[in-house]
Length: 84
Length: 138
Image (cartoon, rainbow over the protein chains, first blue to last red):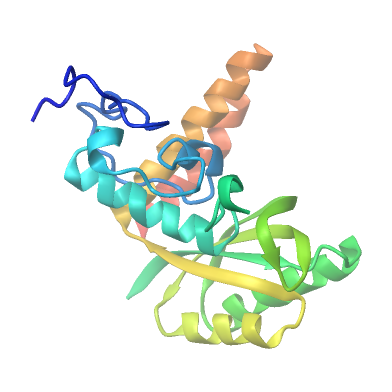
């Protein structure tokens, strides 16, 4: 499962970060906090996979849901800066 | 069964404040008239949209928090659809746990602000408490 130290890092892909909510049971993530949710997207506005966010499966689902709501309400872009 | 809902919508920012206020007022009235209970209204105000909606780049964000039967959501959303000044809306139901988490997050945010200001935080904590108590009582 440990993918670090395999040498090549893909272009611009952030390294796996430690679970920001480690040990905490995340119950609710507000879709209105766009600054916070941005941390879980890349500069194209794509949602980062679990292997990069370091979140537990449950927490990742919570974050994903919040990001999708945030996109609908134009707090976050569907397509980020990179491609416009 | 009454549940807690949070409805955020975007109003046309080109309107003057009085017009926006009247739209918000009408939305609140829709909730109350249908047997809901308004808990809080939060104006996030004018904000830049992440992408244009209806050829507009800004929006005026308002969040209504209320407690109501699920069937009134339909009516509130119908009002928001029919109002031309509302560009978009979303309604989210929060269960007890989520609500508590949201409240504690809000409390944390307030605390942070207070730390920054190094001001008396007791005054700000108190307004949140009666609401939480009201939730439990229900």
